[in-house]
Length: 213
Length: 85
Image (cartoon, rainbow over all chains, first blue to last red; front, side, top):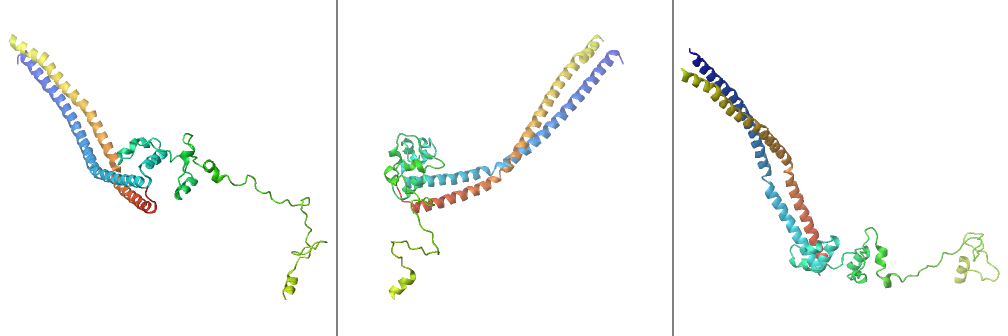
């Protein structure tokens, strides 16, 4: 074989060897890619399967919650009126009055009255009695009077003519002891007191029985 | 004979490097895809595992229905015992 033929043969062998090496390596990489994609596709299938019931379940929950919100809003507006309902919501959740009620678009334009800033036991009692609590009328511009723990004193100050009529100081307790202003002689017999000179005799049960006879 | 030499040298010195260059490019590209695909598979598996709690939504649904029913009962009672505005 001539020398150029040998060179050509070597070149062809090298080309084939290179193609074998790189193509086999490429095949291995492609197989790894295929395995990874199979794993990803299986996991995606699980995701699709697991998320399938989410939409109807969430829709059902939202439907029930919507019904609850509608019922509560309707009940609140029915019982308290639209204006007082907005005031109550704004008092419990500051700023909620500006958002209004979902089923009452006009509620967002109502200025929330200050009816929910003081809800102590006394106020609630008055409310149950059907009386209007003059909280806002007493201090329309003052600070919030609500006290989370105990607001009885603050509430009492709102009713000066009704709650402050009791005497400032009650009668003192009687003084007892050896130096008390009123002295009593000690009893010799339990229940029988010695008759002092100048004082009429106290009737005893026996004398009362005789007189009656 | 000269052309034979030239052809042989061209195959050895030109064609062989070009073939190696092209095949090496294909291999490197394929090898860079492998870790990306593996990360995708791991992320999908983790996402699937995170969704194991989805069946609890059925319990949430039942609880929501019971809660709304209770609220409706309370609302009906309040509607009876409290006068309208």
